[in-house]
Image (cartoon, rainbow, N blue to C red; front, side, top):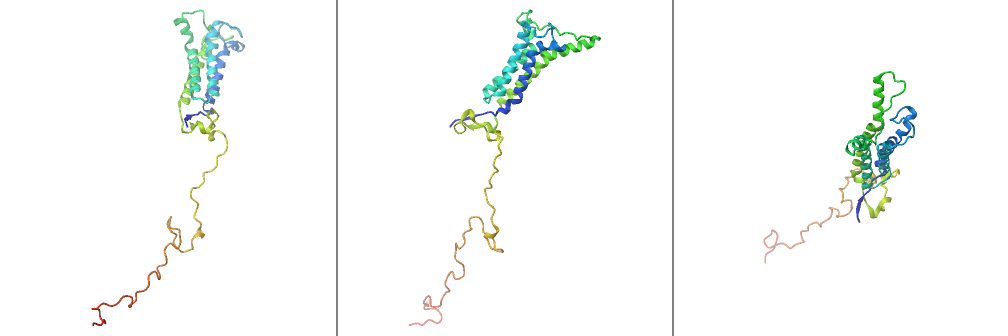
Length: 244
């Protein structure tokens, strides 16, 4: 019988859910941000260009797909693959723009520039808003996705004692650990029952374990017959013996 490891689904549930939400945000915020003046140029809702495809949609889709794998699987290898895919998408959120511009030498693929909030009267306020747009579109989203992807990798690479099961006994992927099914577990049965007080008369010492059998040896009273003077004949030199 082959011993295998199984992962409870709840192990990656929180990381997977957060990765899906962050990936969806990173992929869609360039298209819906202009509705609340939170956008990069072009400042139009649902405007499509190559920069939004390669710098927002692709890494966001990678984070969403990785989060779904982490969320749904109970296989250790698939979970680690999902965490790695999500972490790669987060890294692209952070470093995608300089890589495309300087390493790939494709200046036409650009995310644009942060737009200024309408009505901003102070230059410092405008700069702060543009900084927040940079964080909300790329940098902060990428950092969080990388962190959650690495966390999922660590959780799926960890093997606990309750993950070790026998495939032949529990049926492979259909195995569910008793502690994970939400059912109450029976209390442990005491190995030794309490000795009843009525088993032995009051005032008499109780025997040691293994000596409970009564009557094992006869009573010492009358165990051997009393010696009789006539049991053995007298010797020739004993007092009272007659010599021939």
